[in-house]
Amino acid sequence: MRTTVSRLRAMQRSLPVADRPRRPEWMKVRAPSAGTRYFDVKKLIHGASLNTICEEARCPNIAECWGRGTATFQILGDTCTRACRYCYVNSGRPAHPPDPLEPLRLAQTARTMGLKHVVVTSVDRDDVPDRGAGHYAATIRALKRAVPDASVEVLTPDFLDVEEEALQTVLAARPEVFNHNIETVRRLHRRMRGAKASYDKALWLLQRAKELADYPVLTKSGIIVGLGETNDEVVDTMRDLRAHGVDVVTIGQYLQPSARHARIDRWVHPDEFRWFREQGEALGFGSVFSGPLVRSSYRADEQRHAAAGRAPVAY
Ligand code: SF4
Figure 1 (cartoon, rainbow, N blue to C red):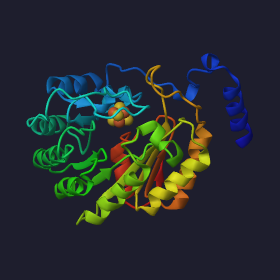
Figure 2: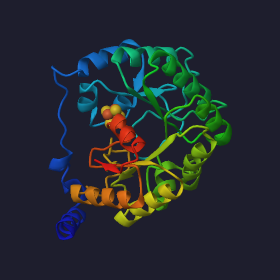
Figure 3: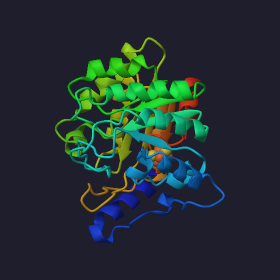
């Protein structure tokens, strides 16, 4: 395996950027099709004036996820106050304060969709005093009223400068899963995420969430590969996450969303994703989802069930 991968890697690196293979076979995705729930989901979400990270980040899995009737909601608007080098979400100064009716529309939509596990993420709102924590809590509470049998997963920003209070606010609403993505390895973190973000603060946030929760919250984080990291650095990052009590990890291939974003450094081979999974299992994660098209919210319901059962399950 290593020989094949090394040869592929050497070949990729030896080519001028313009000539590098654009997308290997294993990165191919299917298009949305009739006969699935894709168009129903689209109509519901757009009809409720909601945003999803599926669309905002141009996720390659949208046909599959929406086709099976799931989506990941993006609250707090469509404009992010950060500008991470890998992220396609619109960046700038948000034009509006958080919409107080958004939690209700989202909860009603989740109910109509029949979701059993609802994943909610957001843009960063460094312009809002509580960084959006109260809006997260309102959304979780609205979901627990509208879909009491569903579990709720939040994938939060880092709550710059109000971390402790924001965590208390969010966890008081009792989401079943608290997710904060570390995104990349320590060496690349500042370069990819900017000076406001911090690798160590991301680890602290994950550990502190578990300490503050007065119930057994699952913690989760995600790593993007193909940004210039080495495989050993990926394992080091998993080791750091486990040392901070993280239960679930996801690892997926970076896709460059536009020419102004960070360039893809390499296509990580499926065999390497399998190796990451084995390393993650050995480190003791409750669930390891590692694959080219894995995203933080990809089949999040299955990730949660795997980890809640505490049997190491891998994708
Ligand atoms: S992986 Fe997540 S972001 Fe991508 S389409 Fe599926 S639910 Fe949406």
